[in-house]
Each structure stands twice: as structure tokens, then as C-alpha cells.
Image (cartoon, rainbow, N blue to C red; front, side, top):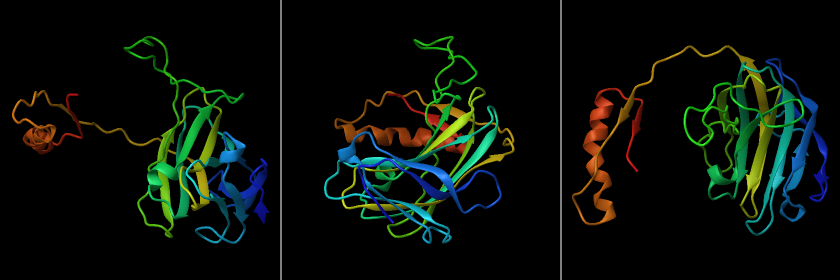
Length: 235
């Protein structure tokens, strides 16, 4: 089934709203900010990672393309969710730039929500910050191979729905298939301690910019010996 680029349609695709498997369900639609940038779209009922179907995006010549499959699902504020999605692409030079998934937390009217704790500094000090889009970890993998996005997310307390977006952008004559997309409730992860190291160094040795970064290496190695999870470097 070939779908015209200039139309916005609601399509059938396999989404796991719970842990139980499902086949095709309604709810997916194609979005693009401009008709002239909208990729071609198709739905394959027999394709996909497990043969249960796939949402397809394709582009023509040029790099002006941008569009995504999108669907909104109900969530419970404060709960934890696991996001998963499989993708396979062809003819894309920079997959992390052109093929990605994101999740937006919203209220019942589709508006962005905020986190519970207020900001402790900056111009918005004292105001709960906006819940920015979540970007599940992009998988490794070569063209023509199925690879899985995987993310563990917590919904803000005031969120009632999550908007899922599956993108193809800025790549000419490209193709991507999205398959086996799920947003499933899961238990909260166990807490763990994180070690933070801060490096205070003004690298004065050397003349060229390339002479400066190596001077941080011994200090980073020392932080690693102390089992630091995150190392903060000066600007």
C-alpha cells in the first residue's frame, strides 16, 4: 500500500501498550512541518523485525526531508516505563542525526508538563523546569541490519500521556523501517550512588589548541582509579 506524501493519515501498526503482544492497531499518523519536506510513507503488514509489520519512511534526492510517525498513549504520572523500538535503515550517512526516536510527556490537552522539583538556580530558580523530550539510547548497527532503541523513563507526576515520535530526517534517497514499538510500565529501578569528580586545571603548557586536551589525561585517569562515574571538566 503506497501512501501519498501530501496527506496526513492514521495508519495501522503493531504497538505494545502492555506487556501482552499485539498485532496491528489504530493510532499512528505521519507528521512533517511542511508538505514539501514530508517523506514518503508506507506500512508493511508482513515486514518488521519479527514479521509483524513495519512503518516505513522514504525520501527522494536532497537533504531537506523531515518527518515522523507519531502516536499518543496514556500514562500514569510518576510511574516508570520501558521504551523499545526496532529500526532498519539504508543509505543514511549519519544514522544518529537522521534516524531517532523520542518521547514527549504531555497533559490531557497535549501540552508540555513540568517536573516536580523547582529549579535551584538560573533565571527560572524556584520554578519547576519543563519536561523536555526524552531520547532513548540510539543503537549501534550497520545499514540493512535491525537494531533496537531502548530507554527506561519516568513520567512526570502531572503527565497523563506520552507522545511517541519515530523520525527520518536530513538524508536523501534514504529509507527506514520502524518495528515492534512499545512503551511498557515497569517497576522503579533500585537506587544507586554515583561518584562525581571535578577537575580544576588551566592547561598552560603548549602553543596549539591540540596541546591542551592531553594535559587532562592524567587527572581523568586518577578519577577513574577512584571509580568516578562522571568527570566534570572546565570550559
